[in-house]
Amino acid sequence: MSSIENPAASQYLKPIWDILKTIPDPEIPVVSVVEMGMVRGVGYNAASDETEITITPTYSGCPAMAVIKENIRTALAGHGVHQIKITTKLAPAWTTDWLSTDTKQKLRDYGISPPPNSDSAAHAAIACPQCGSEATEMISRVAASPCQALYRCRACLEPFPHFKCH
Image (cartoon, rainbow, N blue to C red):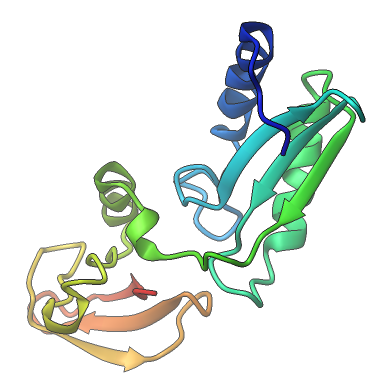
């Protein structure tokens, strides 16, 4: 992306970020693609008159990327932005450490056990998002999406997805 040096250009980018913040993750609609950390950058290239969006998938084979790109194009077009270049960037690889505390709370409130920070993941207990108990067990390494594992709480007996740490 071209670097933006003038104030008019940065004033242009804030509304673009605001629009992107409204686009839900297609697999977890309670959080946006921005909150998930998939939107890595926004810029404007004056030479090509294009708004440039850089995205990083939660993993390299993420099947939702085509939908995410289309949702970005549709949302921006709905606000009059039609010249759009979307670049997928795989490095650095997406990490659950990019999720904010607020995003993790939204996942928990939605019924998904959020990942711990990767530096504490090896020793972190998986807490049930329903009752908070750490007496849980994995039932399957894959849940609704490859990014999640399926757990069951031994206290309340409810199954729940857990967002894998990576």
